[in-house]
Image (cartoon, rainbow, N blue to C red):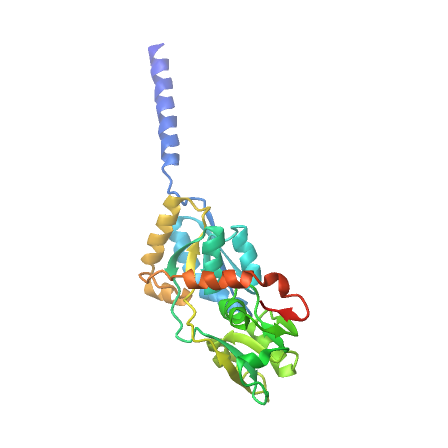
Length: 285
């Protein structure tokens, strides 16, 4: 009888030991992480750019790593709003909104772009010469969430009345609408101007206005629904990732977190006039 009791106790102890081992799995075990990024028209390149990063982070955390590129800032903002993205590789406008409104925390800056200014472009032969000349015209902007395509342009247009505002899904669409005469001017980043200015055959563009305010860099942000232990592990693994992997996705492991206070003040000013943007004419005050 004592032998049977002793055997049962032994089996019970082994079961408890196995249960304890199960509880000691790493915090990210069986976790699914969704990485969000804006791809514009570069879906395939974006997938390829994140391939090694996904493999590295998946191997280190034991998590399933998914990548979800979106077409523009508007779609990205919806994903952030619902905390559907665990990590976000966000341009500055989206990063500021994610931090200010949705409790995402910036953990690394993205690489600084020295050409991170917004510009208004016009066709080379346009009669427009100054920002105030946009009074009464049709202007093409980017989607909500874009610092250089939406927030900074509207901030600089404050006080004017426009005939209409068109919202382009991609920067190339802005160039196309200006080339076609559908819009008198369009807002893009200086980097996008240099990249796309010669992509439309037979059409030349020039800069009408350059904002002197440099746009802060974007950031990698982590969602508030990731537990603190997992957040810290992810930070550590990303800090110690191979340099080639870091370079491919473009963050700065030991960089200073961007200060989005000015960016957030721009967003607040623009938010106050958002209800008027679909009117005709558009009174930006």
